[in-house]
Length: 387
Ligand code: NDP
Ligand code: MG
Image 1 (cartoon, rainbow, N blue to C red):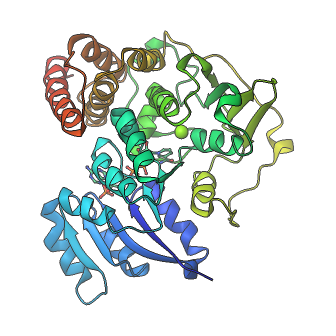
Image 2: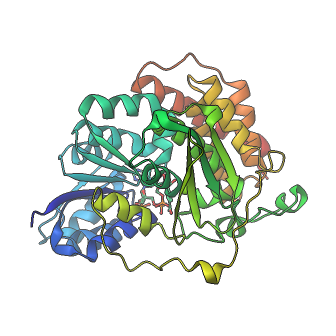
């Protein structure tokens, strides 16, 4: 039995801890190289000790001393700062989980792809901001990019045994979030607590708000556009409140394949962790007789303009997807702090995309410059509308 070396970026988060839960099921099979967090040194140190990681990195340099002390006497080396995050990603494990939230995950994800091994990608914001660059990096290095986002993982599974040029259409399903049937008037006054309480999935705060605005589906549309080149007009979005069908692929012969499962992120993560094998998990089996029926409806662009914004961003190309993503990150953070209202999140994204048009980015430095400038402008815009 050969052990697999593994690193997890964003180990303390929802996807990160779910990945570690799966590793616990077969501890002897894996050797953990790097675990990382943003600032939660206590939790990171605990996990690093349990999994006997070689190195633990906090992105926030101010947490270095705390992490070092917590790890004193253990076999894990402590490190801190964005550069150390990149160095840790270059340690060349067999398998890397990219589960940092936001564009902050882009540099370590690119560094991991450069090693030419397998990268399981949860960090959709990185792909949204720098999709062309990331896909080129993966190709150049011969890396395997395994989608972890449940929809993209479903499509990836439905494509086994088929080829992308045989695909007629891809359908991304969407739960519709907690406000699927709410009017705009009702949505105007929702609180952060209401927005993070997703009906089906238990996730980090940022993606939960994204699900509530349906920007998550917009980001996933851009993600799908890069991962599965079938052309934007051949990617559909279908609201499916039960989150049982995770996505579908229709082939030219009109045969449609779907992937189903309980709404538990450990299922797509397990598929990426064991790929191309299958592992046993203790996730809930799907009981369709209990669920009884599955519902479907078209998304409502008026109440949820995010999907349209994302489609527009792909069509516009250049800097627009990175601008959309960075503005959304700032707007979601402002909403969670109580500084703006729920409906203002997509309004601000829309205003930014219309008002800021830098030249097309050529490289990573250009993308970072656009990301930084967008964040500055978004913060200024938010100051104007602050509640
Ligand atoms: P969480 O907020 O739960 O976790 C985020 C992780 O990233 C934590 O480990 C956090 O560290 C770390 N982190 C946050 N900011 C930074 C930063 N600036 N630099 C370095 N590390 C940072 O997020 P999720 O696990 O929910 O989501 C992770 C990614 O996966 C997102 O891109 C999300 O869209 C995607 N995804 C998540 C799903 C889910 O079910 N949760 C489903 C599909 C996709 P710390 O704990 O110290 O803050
Ligand atoms: Mg998803």
